[in-house]
Length: 93
Image 1 (cartoon, rainbow, N blue to C red):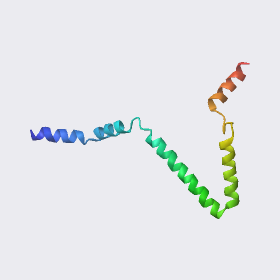
Image 2: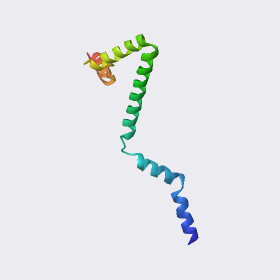
Image 3: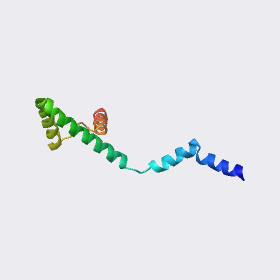
Image 4: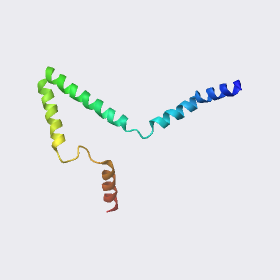
């Protein structure tokens, strides 16, 4: 009787059991992505705020560039899949 209780306690506390439980909890949780984006946004805002105090000219230029990128309709960088597809098309011609 006591051995069975001890075995069950060891099984629930084993590394494999804890890893499995952790994986089950972590699946399908977009909260981490949202939290990471929020942290990056807050850090960027803080960097711009502090930069504006110490280096207003440089920060103004960076902010103007960011504003231009946000307002622009074009892509910041080319989609790599499109680049590979265009390269393959050129090879076939």
